[in-house]
Length: 233
Ligand SMILES: O=C(O)c1ccccc1N[C@@H]1O[C@H](COP(=O)(O)O)[C@@H](O)[C@H]1O
Image (cartoon, rainbow, N blue to C red; front, side, top):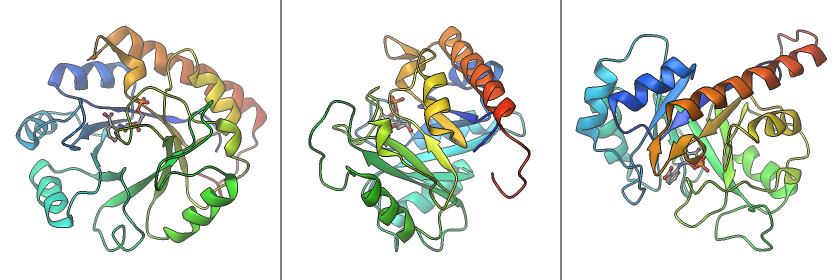
């Protein structure tokens, strides 16, 4: 992909965070329902925020290894539109949802020599895993870090050596300074950021604006390289 990637800002915990992200130009925001995450938000609070959002902003929920009934309950209570499964969910778990599903794969961190259980260390492993998840709408490529995600660390981008069968969202340690390079290297459908737009653990409006501007610049450069191709997302 091709052209200007979409931006998702993850770990929204207040209405102010949501407003800043939307004003900065994000197309999607996400609420984190992983209980161990420092960005966890209670469903009641997420629902309050979602109820007053303007239209045309995609709203996602991040889950990791959560029982299905519990996800169903939170999704319908909060009226989420897209679900991001960030744990060890297998292809069977990712089937037969009435919502769009993004499956996250955790890739070897830049500079690391080993990976944790379920994380991927080569293009061949990634390609094989991606082929198993027929019913998801996109893959999120994130970094293998303790706590499953959100640590602000990049993965080894050279592991990605071609196209995957679904649109690719790139996350993991992106910042206003490196997101342009990530886009030029990986040409994703979308980029995803949590830590890189925060200061002292709080969402930072200036960093969010700088992030979206960096995506705009890289997206324009990418556009110049591309002929319109309606067959690609
Ligand atoms: O943000 C978290 O705390 C988190 C916890 C558990 C699973 C996923 C989490 N966040 C996701 O991690 C990536 C990258 O975050 P970062 O930019 O490196 O901080 C992002 O996709 C979040 O959705």
